Length: 156
Ligand SMILES: [Zn+2]
Image 1 (cartoon, rainbow, N blue to C red):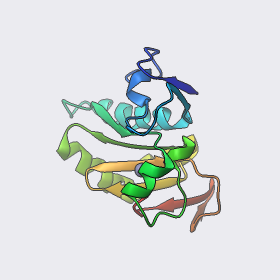
Image 2: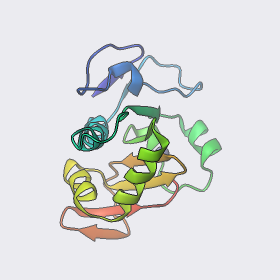
Image 3: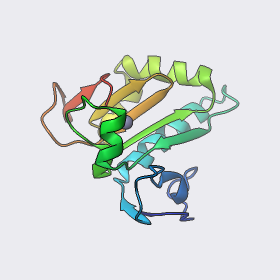
Image 4: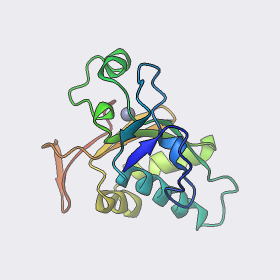
């Protein structure tokens, strides 16, 4: 999808276009590409915990989507694949810190939640403190499952 600065399209049930726009101050253009599998995957996570009916706050915050190479190198100088500048990565979290912990623990178990995200097309998983990184890289990665290659738990 093409994301517009300040855009008001309802991208998924709970995510609006403007939330997905780059917050990199070096980025000066008013539009950019973003793989729509990323908001889809985040919405899936929100719906998954919403549907359990035991968490009062399942709201999500998008921390970062598209970044310039300059910003990406500043933030992560040793990174091999710059996925954020390509519009194929997102960093996000649940507002509820407890739920974040539950989510990250569950993700690491490679069960239902992880498999559904693999089905949606997430191929890179990173845990950065309370933040979770998803990307949709199509390069060969260290791990392989029935959906193809994937990378996990590194800082991207
Ligand atoms: Zn990231």
